[in-house]
Image (cartoon, rainbow, N blue to C red):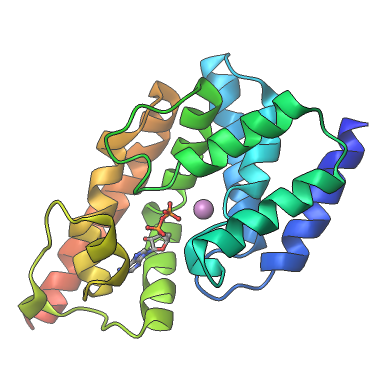
Length: 215
Ligand code: ADP
Ligand code: NI
């Protein structure tokens, strides 16, 4: 039964966001699912079925991938109704999906260990070599520059500024990506973030030496 539900969710997610060019494609979702299950195994905690379903669905209602936040919510609601899940399961999935985004998770206590695990897995995919690729893909789609030092680093942004303010992809590392390791919820994810963090730091060092024409 559950295997069928998971297969149906996979089919739906591939159909809805399979080839998204901003770094939110099927492969992102699949990595978040896999890393979430790795974290759950490392921590020896959490309902693996809930984690897997929520990880697969986590970006479906995202405002930036839909016409509006409401359109996104309706989309997820409508799809969940087709799966024949019980009320509690649907509620747990919704709770995770809506609580884990950077804005939602920014400082607020998450509702469950499952939410903390899926959030860590999503954050792992925003750092390291893959995080670098995603930042430039997203930045290009948004029409922002690779680097614009004159914009400065925006600290403590409101959600509105974060979503709509002017930034560049390199600025985004200082505004968000370098902070994510310190925001991880689980020890397992903190360990998984270590190499990724070092790689991003090395990348930024090299970037800045080339930018300043020092090498
Ligand atoms: P979430 O989906 O967890 O709320 P975001 O929407 O902030 O997270 O980011 C999703 C992906 O898009 C991440 O890989 C992130 O680095 C990238 N991204 C978001 N905003 C920017 C930006 N201004 N410049 C470059 N990349 C960005
Ligand atoms: Ni995501």
